[in-house]
Amino acid sequence: MRIKTTLFAVVLGLSGVALLFALPGAAQTPATPALVRIDLTGTDDLARVAALNVPVYAYLTTPGADYLLAILAPDQQKNIAALGLSQTILDSDATGVSYYLLESDGGRSGASVTTAASLFAFLHDDGRHAVGRLRSGIAIASLDALDVRFIPLLDPIVLVAPTTGAIPTTPPYDPLVADLLTRVTTETVYGYDGGLSGEWPISVGGAPYVLTTRYTYSGVPIAKATQYVYEHLESLGYAAYYHNYTLSGHSLRNVIGEKQGLVHPEQIVLLTAHLDSRAATTPHNPAPGADDNASGSAALLIAADLLAGLDFDYTVRLVFFTGEEQGMYGSLYYATDAAAAGDDIIGVLNLDMIAWDAEYGPDIDLHSNAPGTVDDSDALADLVAAVIDVYDLDLILQIVENGTRFSDHSRFWDRGYAAILGIEDHFNPSEVAAEPRDWNTNYHTVNDKLSTLNLNYFREYARAAIAAFIHLAGPLREISGTVMSAVYLPLVMHQ
Ligand SMILES: [Zn+2]
Image (cartoon, rainbow, N blue to C red; front, top):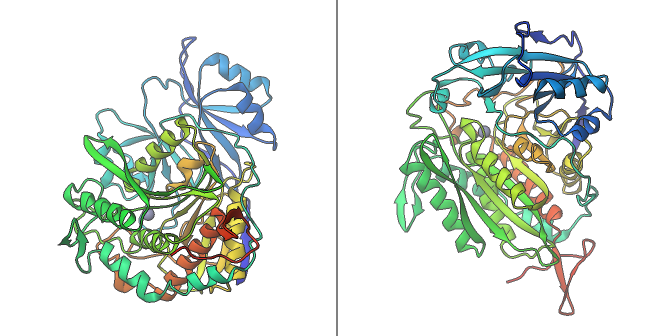
């Protein structure tokens, strides 16, 4: 492994000046809640705000400042002030308002939040994130025309998550894991990605079907895509099930394959990817999405094949989300329901775009949670770093400690779960000039096709993710008929 660098939150601190578009706060009636920015200054500020139990909707980091977005009544604002924290009113009346977080700097030419001005009134822009108030009469589905990434701020988030220490950060070399990785080849990644991205028919319900799109609102195609994944998981012996939700009048579903843990079945590890795709404009067909995100989905299908013969300490879930391109709705509802059910998820490894590599070597980005957050997300990144080293994978690792929120992993952060995003050299607002981004020029177009992918890079990335996930799940051995958790002994395959 070649470790190039580790980025911290404040690499570029040129100005640190937030651009505030807020109007002066209008006079408030006593109970009127306002959208408020709360600036954080010390390491214990998160815990102090959390102790007030006020509704916070986002925790954002920029090169210059860390802050929270909260909707606060005047008395709650007084409580924040009593902590000595400064706050800015971004919108004086939050009653009945829908707020969205938009990616202000995606590192992409042409993408600008200004293109969304007809849909949103912008309240704030820190150079990385913009906050918009949805204009009245705008339907969620119409946001699909935007060439910017956005997240609806729907529910208060968990500010302080527990540190469990359950994530192994120094996995030992395991010969069977190494052997399993030899079964992840350029042919396997090519095969699964081509089927998902419509290069040839796949078998769904026993009949051939060509997935020309996996657009969330496509109707039959996305139903076929989810059915294909479901059938694949079920055929391998996983407990396969759908997680249903409704968005903009569409009945949608995520797909899950689960294998019960044998030692700690109540503790759960997730390997996730979004299955849906989009193109630049409606009707989003074709929308091959070979990199975004047939690549991550292919890695999960391969993981399903390899893990099918193993038993684990923890319960394993392979989760395929839909609705990601509409604002990470599938993962929003999944993570919300998991938290409501009390699911003890100890780690989420989310893969989104792992097959594009054109320049500057095989860089990968691992996006972890904000530096002020002490949780197991950093340990997950360390685990992936370790397996790249242990299994000598040809990848150049970069850990982004103030990672992007614009993929499904952040929905788990918001519910207090440890999670990371594995992505190519893609989103990185803190990237220094000496390490330019390696941008997928076909992103969200009809040209995001199998033929453009770097198959060696794709194979290595899939190997890293699968190896990390096996070690995370706690592979079990059978010794003298006794099932035991023994990380330091070789694995045996269950036939
Ligand atoms: Zn994606």
